[in-house]
Length: 256
Figure 1: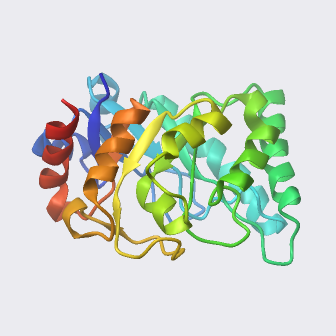
Figure 2 (figure 1 turned 45 degrees about the vertical axis):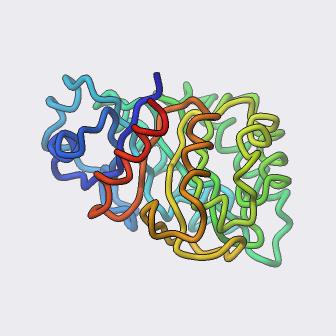
């Protein structure tokens, strides 16, 4: 049975999960806007011992597609550091955004940069846990906003068996219809490892990454439940914290 949970503050994720009645939890291991190596988590022993399923989100600034060496090379390094730290506390996967290239770049170069990152890591022994690539909301030259581009990316990296995270807010704001999205994603990736269940503060194809609670977004929350049901994977909500309990209760009623 799919597990339901939420993205919470990293200070005490187990207490936050308990407060939400969550079965899974997601958090950052460090500052999501920093290139610094993640410090040891102060509750590492408790995290290793918990029965909760743990997902870790990589920093937002990771961009393995970038043509800028000052971004791409540190991105590879910090992704490895976060993968090691996530594996150390028993996480099920490390989530990373698909990234982008600039408007003047050939997107094929970004796709190739992703392939090289996996290839080099494979030569070094591979990642210690699954890397889960997430679709994104914005950017005309993004690697995982539009699904034609996602197909290009998977053609290049699919052999390394990354996982996929489907974010409903990102898909909606990125211009991908939700009604049949699970079928369209799995036709490309062959899998959906996790759903980020979020509504959107902005309209369809807006390109804006602004999450909303289920009852205050711009599309029918029944679509979120339908995506979660069709995907059959674990679900993490990344909605504003004051609405976590209501959002999780909505999904429990719809999915259980």
